[in-house]
Amino acid sequence: MVDSAIFPHLVQKYQVSGVPRIIINETTSLVGAQPIEKFLDEMEKL
Image (cartoon, rainbow, N blue to C red):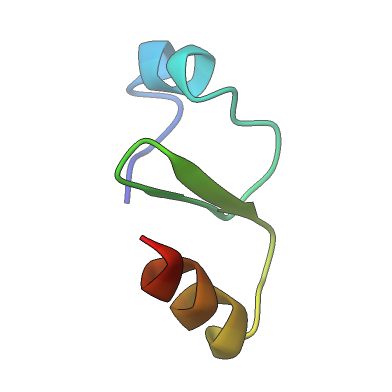
């Protein structure tokens, strides 16, 4: 977890516009509350 107020450069780098934002290996991201199945599906794709 990263605090956007402390690390604004990461907000810009990863184009965070909503929270939560999950970024996996800098290639995949999920925005908002997602069901665990969606998270696991994205992990399996990698």
